[in-house]
Image (cartoon, rainbow, N blue to C red; front, side, top):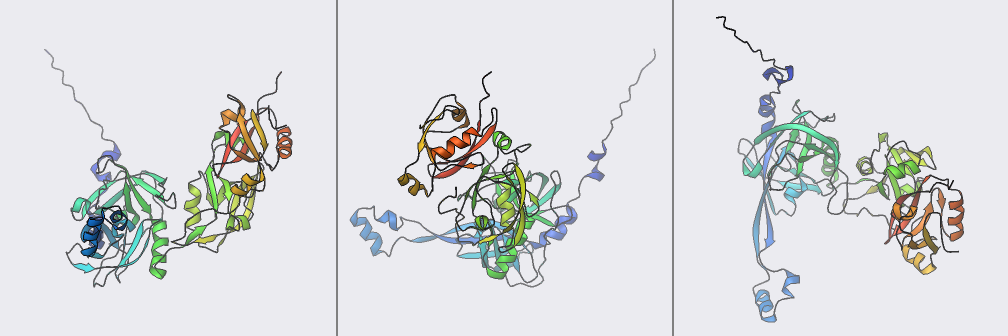
Length: 460
């Protein structure tokens, strides 16, 4: 009987061969001596603070006051960092050394140095330290940007496990993670590299051994890595470190506008082919934006040669421009693109990024479905407005209702027309076309907002 033998040949795809996988060992060998572990001590109250003492019974309050107030105890924290110059400058995160009373830096060869905090920047979560040491290894910060899908490597001290190495790929770029104050100046690099508590402030490398980012945050449900980590990109690091080294503080570009996202309906109303750009909802009085001719109702499409694909891109780009610089901005105004010369202002480290000051900018409307009246002077004064119409009522399932307009809103612009009175509003309505999507600028609970309303088709 004939025996049939089947031979199975396994095809090995080129990108799965060991020869094509990255070899991280040379990077680790050359870079690890410049990575440091940071040990931080800070003082915290172990017992009630001053505000809490006032709420205690008098006999307990006198007890604490007699003992000299609430005692302090040492709180220990740790993180990572890396040396960027042979004279001892070290980069780490702001949150690693925030409130520190003592900072100790430990090198791979177990040398330890007491570090001086040269300066920190809470908006970028970066800090610059200084040690006095000899024969220090140094890391280079990359000039080029990373690409999604590129291999990256991290070295740090997760959970106190000194100089651990983890690797992965770049998952996404330009991630917006606003701070507690709502500020958004860092376009974070997202990776699937295993980053855990203790990695904060450590370097993220490309395959050339250059630092492409500083590990800063993770998204987690358990307290450990689930494959969502975020690093501050190299261009932000270079900008902040240079300023901290020179002055100990950071000043970044500032326009003085509040912005919102452009959705599909707003894009159509402004004549855009797709949702993109940052819609300027409010412009501060005497702000750099106002002085440069930017007003509410324009869409920022490009700034300093960089495309603005979403509203979160604008703070990233503006923040990196040196205050006082003149750059070009492409804006969409009244359905047309226009190039403006913009002189960027400066936002100091301790200055809140706010837009203050007044906003530049028969009682019914059966077409759009609103009951309106001219807003009274007292209301306008409270809102800092020179005029507008007050929405008294919105008809359910009307264009206004479907567009999100609510009673109590104050409309200050309809399409390209400023609205200061009912007469202005009626004239603007008469210019609308059936089926048109029109942008409406309004003030809701003191804040500016743009919404899109679709004008109903004419009855046949």
